[in-house]
Length: 480
Ligand code: ADP
Ligand code: LRH
Image 1 (spheres, rainbow, N blue to C red):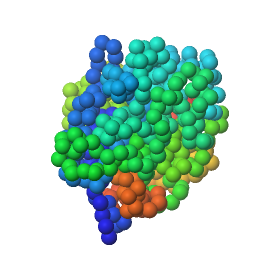
Image 2 (spheres, rainbow, N blue to C red):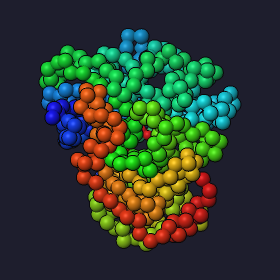
Image 3 (cartoon, rainbow, N blue to C red):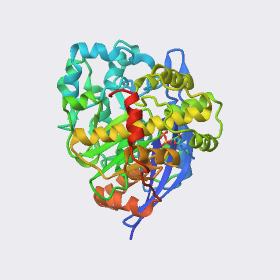
Image 4 (cartoon, protein in one colour):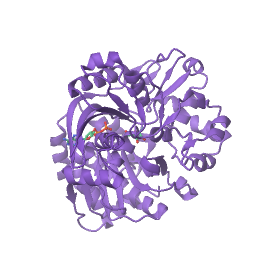
């Protein structure tokens, strides 16, 4: 059978990579062409993405990939570049961890109550939702003079092709989309004074997104035409597309900088109970909804490791495995952990405040983080099932965190369900598969997932013991 070569540009908050996928009806092979760090930069006005550095990494990666049949791009959500009337970028995109959105939500809720926002958009409250970022920037010189707003993957696609669009799965994280109509929430935007004309027209996974510009072909050593194909450009949408589930009764956890834990549904859940539990309804492929909760994820560990001067991760995890379990836990869903800096002492403070032993050694702090993540996974998956009325028998863990065996094992124990871990590069695989599908090489979602399950190494963790200890730890944290 035919097979084709698709390049996946996948930018995570901690690293960017260009992966090369060889895909056919019975083939799915992924190799890494290039990986580069994603290091945000603090300047006097705040925390910024080094977007030119990332774009240079993308070009290096495409050159290393060699000639390909198609290119797709996904990245972290909500962030964007503002462009002037000439199509030039106005400044470095603001990082979603920047402090500019502090106190902004309360202002928005004064004109549109939080319950009404949730009913209209189904989106969780997170301070960084694009809606709040745009409100924070309202009077800024950049936003006032901007003619176009491009979400990060759409900005890179524009630089590669010269064509502008707004990809739907990522647009759903702006909090300006109605998950029922899967179109802009026009009335809401008008009430909030957000000009939707900044966004170029919506495009959907599978749509063509132009071809590489002659200059880009030159720089990457490719021969044109090379199409850019729209994928689920939100990295989480791409990752969920590659979850190797074989039925409907599954939950997923996308573990990387974040843990995104929840379900794939046919329709959004916009009940008051769902809002109170801060579950989000992001849009996925083929009319699906990603019903999930954002958990701080391995960010907590990344920030500690950074503060400790980058010790070897393997050694740290081995030591953490020897520490007594569930001594102290923190609420890994708490937005208090969003900002960078001083993470070990912030974790110690949270343990002290809840009357638990304060973790002191690096191994103890690491164990506290992993126990806390597993506990947050348990809570999200349990709540998602009851709020959506959708029971599951298995938890699929995908993303970089699948390389952390202790985390996978603790997650199985905490959930009291088997965990199937892998693939680690789920977002890149989902990206490649959607390109392949647009080019007629694979069939529907179930077929894409079947192909991942047949071809990628997966590891199964059976739950050990009962979940009593986890329920007791949960009680120490209160209700959320
Ligand atoms: P993102 O896409 O958000 O940048 P990734 O999915 O690449 O994140 O996951 C990165 C995380 O995966 C790291 O922070 C680290 O905790 C974990 N990780 C990566 N490699 C390993 C490894 N060899 N052992 C344990 N954990 C790992
Ligand atoms: C993960 C992710 C997540 C968003 C966050 C901003 O990379 O896209 O789904 O909530 O970044």
